[in-house]
Image (tube, helix red, strand yellow):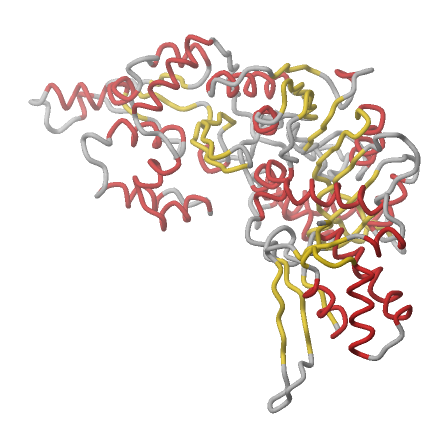
Length: 541
């Protein structure tokens, strides 16, 4: 039931080494597009599923002499294979293999071939090639590409070798690379320039690097010194300055400090505190149940500047007779923070346990896997946990103090809109809309001019032969891809919102056309208009 015992290297970030390595990676075309071109889209998809042999087989017919340096780098750092020293030196002429050995990025290993065992000993070059030392990767190093509101970008990211390369369970000090949670949180970051950002639990440093694109200064903290070493290496490798890396737990390294934005993918995984159950630094916070997420959320208020925001990921438990989102709601009752919590998924205890045991590298069908599942289920049963929710948390501290304006706790399991990686702009719009709505009572809203957002369309469904629609749905193309059922009055109201007429004028015209009481129609449409403004289907003109 223990994690892997392989030795993790110490990573050192010498600017001369990272600059030289970046030059070699650039010269080899070691980019997302360049690496995928080595083996094609199908093999790249197989690699994401944990199958590297498809990439090896596909590359055989694609790799030319000119592409050999790129394939050597991809073979080592993406596929996790050892490579002959001569091939590695050719791929890394600027930095050199010796410098990467000292930095902890690779190690040298004697060849397995005994020259006396070779059938053909008449070819000295072949003997030398087969008996030279191998260069073995000690970390995963791969290209990463993204697009945000500042434009397209590409980096190289170092993390620890995964289960595929190790062939074993992960070490408890494993530093995770880029995954689904990484891209989700980076997409949630509000793309508005600010002065200071805190990345709480930075891991390999990817969120701090994203945050730096919109911030003058970033403070990145972690309880893992190894994670901080790797994060510092990544920042230097990609020429990113302005990040202050600090060691410590949760808010301890920033006691007394405030920030304009806080981002965090905290170690929120709910792990039994049972002897023999591995506790991985990158995902386990060391607290019982979801107490770490509660601690982070309730600590935000003290560390946010007025008007400051936070974007986080988290897990929360469902207990017997207690809804998970209600539990999260109770945590915010102790604060004056605006809070928007979006639950994207809910798992039963068995499915949750299986997910995270596999994540640690323990394979289903083994005795160790069964023992770990038993430990998880025993813990959940003892604490009356019936399920675990996963989702996003968006927070804002009021600019002038006072009670919160936004308390929204919802489940959005549907497919997101056209750009799920770019939800940060949607988050910013929702927060702005909530602030605008708080300043507009019904009388002010009625006097306002609204405009239908450009990504909103309307779907209509008819019974065969019937001229009147039976179902009308307003559809948001971007953001969270909201779908809002509409009756005739609401559909007509939204259709008339072009910024020219006030809300009251549109309602009055509709009342006159349909022959209904204007006050009754206003009582129906004003709350609906508020919801549509908050969701971004309508915007203040």
